[in-house]
Image (cartoon, rainbow, N blue to C red; front, top):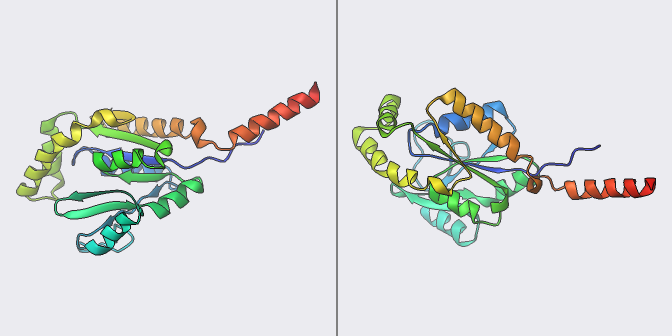
Length: 215
């Protein structure tokens, strides 16, 4: 018996800032290095050490808007004064080749991808913090943002959390290792959905032919 070739998944991870999304995305790719990461396009300026095409595809605002108008973005949003979006071409090529693509995006981007022509192949997962107090503590502990940025992220956090009901799965990230294990289980099971195995119909037809030849 042959194994049907698998179609890739669009794996969407969303959460308010500080809930562990980036850490879990990194662990998921360490678990399966074949998972591609969707490199977003952005109009913001590169930060020290960032490389075009690795952290982001850095574009001008005019170029970004042209890509949106031409249907070349799976999703896009305006966040903190800059545009961010996911180019369609590399994602389509990856899933057609049987590779999963991981998205670290907000609820608006998740909704756009789910409603796109590739929506049938999405797996959306939302991460909740154990408490709002812990969410703030995590933002402060990581030391990446000044107090004003933390304040803005906290203000935005409830808007993010309020959209948890639009996701396929919701995980409370109160223990990182346990959440990682649950995430892997979800991905493994979803890869076996009928919609992700385009060769199943031909395989069943072959079984039918074999059965008929025996009778």
